[in-house]
Amino acid sequence: MRWGRGGAAAVTLNDGRVVIFGGNQYTGCNPEGCDAEIWNPASKTFTTVTASMNDGPRSRLTATLLDNGTVLIVGGDSYPSYYTSEIFNPGDNSFTRTTGNPVAPRGGHTATKLSDGKVLIVGGDYSGSAEIYDPNAQSFTATSDSPLAGHTDHTATVLCDGKVLIAGGFSRTADLYDPVTASFRTSFLPPMVRARHGHTANLLSSCKVLLLGGDARYPATSELYDPSAGGFFVSGPSDNTYRNYHVAVTLDDGKIVIAGSSFDTSSGSSRVLELYDPIANTFSVLPISESYGFYPRVFAASYPDVANCNGCPSGHKVLIAGGGPSSNGYPLGFIFVPTAMSPPPPVVTAVSPATARTCGNTTVTVDGLNFQAGATLGYSFNAPTSVTATRIVATTKAASPGTFSLTVTNPDSQFGYKDNSFTFVQYPPGDVNGDGILSPLDIFYMTLYVNHNGPAPLN
Image (cartoon, rainbow, N blue to C red):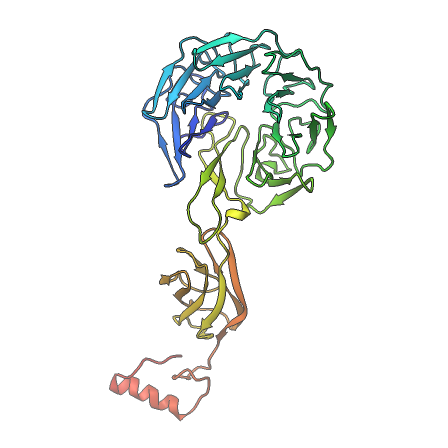
């Protein structure tokens, strides 16, 4: 990205692109904190939006996709952004101030679109109140009552019945907003198992809600909100690391991918990518390079990808990017590809020739399936000179003698190999014709080479 963006907001547009707003900068627009970038899945590139937001900088803001395809942007950490709101129009990449401003200044709040297209805005650093934005009237109106407690860095989750669960925010307090009665007072909830802030909350297919992380005193904890029981319960297994100001995104199959943390001490928690399986009720660590870090206030967005990948199904991938505690941030982006959407791994069926001299420069042909452009061959091979879906051609480097399993690795890190399929052979000095035997024929071939411009010695 152009900037490292901690506390940015990301929205997936109706056309599948992802827009990232603000982040990090707390004192003025440089223009970081006031600008936006668009992630294009087709080209895998970030493009800066020419126009800047009207007010800013904005960090810990909210961005909500409205039914008409525009985006409502509310609040932020700095003056005057926490008093203001605006609309982003992806049709012409413009920012326009809303007709009115929010009824209270907000940062670290939530903005949740309801079934009727209106937006419920709750809490924030400067207010324990709540309000409704009506896109048709382009107006903000305070709710008839307020949550039982002020919520900051909390979560807001639309439940299966349309109610909104407001959970945590430096406390164990939870509230339910009922859009039918337009009130918080129709339901009173018992406290959460743990006080949480900077946690995540994901609706499961069972209509329960998984709440994860959010308190340094209780590492690796999670709990479930069960609407049928009307309360919070310890979920069972523990996450494998500390989590705070992380992201948790629900995948097409109902599993949840989890990345990021502000706890990156000896635990190395920001470098742990995990998957939660709600059916098995388990957390599992996913393979990722230790050099990759997902930082505090990272953002994520699920986006559709229908590109053909050699027969794999279309579905939603996840963009995970940004984060960081200061204005320099971490301008890195990663794409999480669910297993079902991964192209099939390469398959090695034949290698010819199956032997090569240890001095290198032998041309080898590898046949198989599912090879991708940019694929490489393991152990002492130069970059391939030719790659098709079924064949790779490459030359050897100098190597030690021995028999090895020839491995093909695709750019997506999936690999395939054929056991004990290739041998590097050390021929004796003077074996000019490379047949492994010292004989008068070697003298004959050397004479041809020296005196009659014959073929070069093979060894």
